[in-house]
Image (cartoon, rainbow, N blue to C red):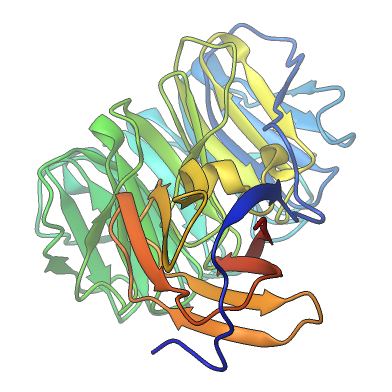
Amino acid sequence: MLLINQPLMKNFSVLLLILLPGLNASAQWTSQLSGTTETLLGVSFTSTMNGFTVGTTGTIKHTITGGESWNNESSGTGLFLRDVYFPDSLHGAIVGESGLILRTENGGENWFNQNSTTTEHLVHVHFFDAQHGMATGQNGVITTTTNSGNNWNLQESGVLVELSSVEMVTSLIAYAVGFDGTILKSTNGGIEWLLQTSGSNADLRSVSFVNTDIGYVAGYDGTILKTTDGGQVWSPQNSGSTNDLFAIHFTTSQIGTAVGTAKILRTVDGGEAWVNQPISFTNDLYDVYFADNVQGWAAGQTGKIYHTDDGGGLTALTEQQIFTQSLSVYPNPSTDHLLITFELATASSLEIYMNDLDGRELIRIKTPVLPRGKNCLPINISTFTSGSYVIQCKTKGLLFSRTLVFKP
């Protein structure tokens, strides 16, 4: 599996040359002034400028400046507003206590009550388009609409736990998640729901799908689950945290963010690695929304809103986020064999090349998926001639180089 044209190299020293063009450095979220100390429970944006957040005692906040300033809007109620969602710039819905559903058709200028057909507390709402929507809540309640909320129809979920989140992937396919590891799927617009095997007993709080096959769920105790086959199999991911997670949002199959108790986590490789993004906030963040791959907002207790315009500083993994211990080459000096040692932050496969200074490839190794933790790869260099060589390691689209210089 290795080896093409191997000249002899006897001894060498190592110069570390790390080639990481275009990567971001530290994660960055900045606090925005919401103008309220009410707990904010939901957030939704229709563009990078226009967005809404809702919360306790009927709070509705609206921005047209990307969150630089937030204005009050009248909800006409003092009930807790638990979630807000806009499928487009004009049509939006808010859900809350006692079956409350508020609807707008003019971008939030006016909100009017709709009959949800339930008095259960509603905690989450999602629309596939302006017409097709669903809301979920306590005691397994699910209510659906196919006509922009003019009529809401109560559906039988088959469970009694709180359903904390719902997502419509198409006008027919939808997922709902809730307490005790509950995951439900519907393929007929919410009329019937099938209980899926989550493999978790955690209270699940949020679901996000990027297409009909790939989806993610987040919940208590740092739980993150992923499916790549439309929910037939759910696999746990290593979030690196035991903090409760309340919301998760993916903009592509690879790029997503989860928030929770004093925590923002981000992945850019489909959840293989979750990177902690430090914030100076010790309370709960209850919702997160990204208008594109880099512009995002997180909202939570005491009116806190965080904003990022660069994906929290993470648009691709850095070497330090792939390797908890940098690549090293041993022994030095060497006679006939060398060992490449490294410690992976997450299970990964690697491609390793050795070239001469004219760019001719002498060795190529493609590893299987290597486990998280310490790894060691032996390479036979007994037939190498003296000279300088470059070892390159490629993984997750990044290239790392080590220059080996022969010293007789």
